Image 1 (spheres, each protein chain N blue to C red):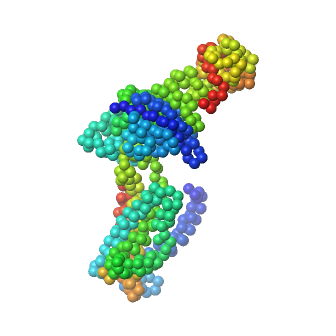
Image 2 (image 1 turned 60 degrees about the vertical axis):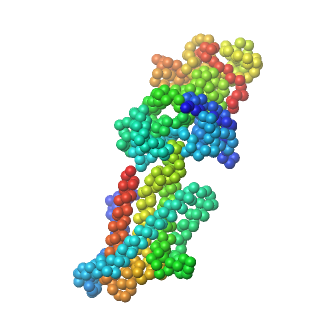
Length: 265
Length: 350
């Protein structure tokens, strides 16, 4: 333990509370409170009601929630496949090629998502690849944005993977593809599912690139939250935000169950 | 079918460093060959050229009559066991053992029988449904051996298989390995170790390696009783090496003439006298050496005496003494003429 004395421990709890409560807890609690309110008088919202939630789980809002989920799952699966592939390829390369490939896949992390959105918009607004106005352009932008995270966490895991397993498998007569699917990927499963969780969470919350790209029939939930608050419907927006938050948490919980089972083996 | 291993001038060079220098060595079909040497001697590199994890810079490696130098590991048909076991942690024991058979597309119906047979052979039949992390080190090593044997390899490569085990388990596993080889007399075994006891116990022949080169090769008895180089004499059995000059009918050690067989060594030439510590006795006898006790170590059944004889330190392992001589006291050591081996000087580097 870093802090030994009783007073020291109390002091560090106090510092934690002072930093954590206003920074993380209060804003989220206010959103939750606002989502149950009809008006805001003084310091606290008032008038408890569930009608915002009733609206948030049907019609346009429900549509937006499924849109977000489908986009996140599709983008995450694509990102995980591409990121893992690239990380495996980079691990097999040496020196320059490896650094180049790694840098290429980390690039979207350095580029603001607004810029990624704009780039995708400009690139795919004309034939031959006319994707503007379709759902595919949204999924594509999300994939570009989250692949970097998938690649990062999978390549870190590959570096930690002891080469002796691969060699033991090859020594037993397993071809490289057999080694990949029966040894390497199963051993990487905990990292892969962690990467999947990260990708899903990022994609569920993505707004800036999405705003530039979404067609009318493919409106993800964050866009709806934004437009609701933008036109002054703070309480509706809050309810939508809580739904978004809860759904993301549920998805992450499901993914982490895969991870626990994988690492238990 | 049986097949041995043949190294044909195999060298491995990394940049400026030669880690294996022109190794030429044949492991006969069904033979257990130990590659014995200190760390960095190139023994593991030699084994890895057979497995296919290291590509020789020069020379060829043959398994049976097949030149495998350019084959990938999975086409070589070897069984291999490494120090850290390398059991697949996500697979059960039986799945680990079945891995090689499945990877080689062995007929599915035969796999359970072969797995059970391999596990039975290593005494791990009762643990088939466990995961590797639920087993002790010794049990994991048995599973690793079962996994290597399940594919019925012609060639078994063992890379320091016992060095992660404690001393007691190690001697038990040593006996197990000897029994396994009696049951599978056709399998050629290349056994890499730095432990001379393992090599002496298991091997039909021992190849002694040092600083990337093969220094000596022979049966354990040959190497132990008639070492050809100083390195072999000291690495295998930790012999006394005394610089002497060949005289008529014996050798001259700093003025003391000792009677030893000199063979065809020219009188007057420099040579090294090699005597095993356990063949040196305390008290008067033939070839008496007078000196002072420098150190005494109690080793249970024996005492090891370090005695300074004319500027040279002589080791003697004697049966446990009732009264150990005090440090600095004068003692007499002796050894029988036929227990000494004369090595030509300058063979230090093989």
